[in-house]
Length: 68
Image 1 (cartoon, rainbow, N blue to C red):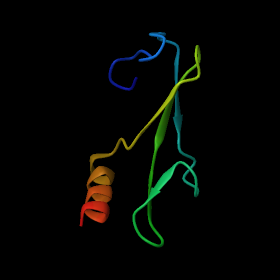
Image 2: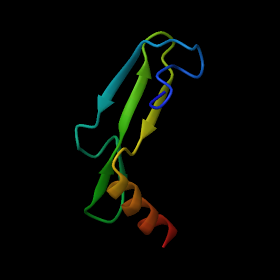
Image 3: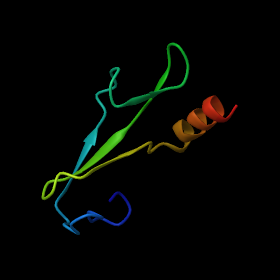
């Protein structure tokens, strides 16, 4: 959805981008006191959602933490 601009389930282009509020939800833990925010994409036609780590720096943080 993020890259195609349409829902993979119903092909609607009615998408909503929802940024993480930066709290304990919509995040991936990368340590005891650290987390990476997720951005959610919602199809307002069928309700399908995707979550993305959008920052390349944050992707690397997740990779380093979980892949060692």
